Image 1 (cartoon, rainbow, N blue to C red):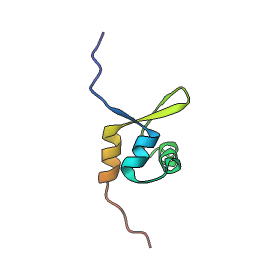
Image 2: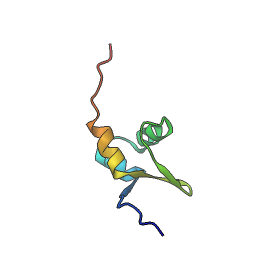
Image 3: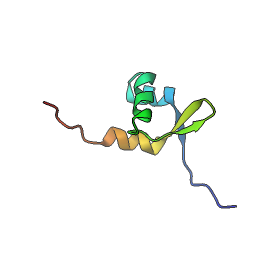
Image 4: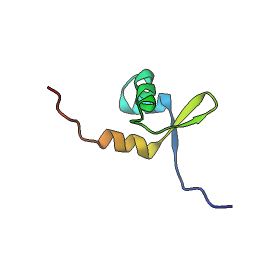
Amino acid sequence: MAELPDVRFLTVAEVADLMRVSKMTVYRLVHAGELPAVRFGRSYRVPESAVAELVQRPVSDVG
């Protein structure tokens, strides 16, 4: 059996706490495809590395 990479997954609530946003915002990011996630049953798990990448992305000016 091949070894799995050492990936740490976070719950939606943990991601929301890290990003200081609501859980609904995290769900919106997941459903929009901006934040990759894996579904386990009825819940989602987000790779910690994906959260770090999203937070470090440059913010574009609007308007």
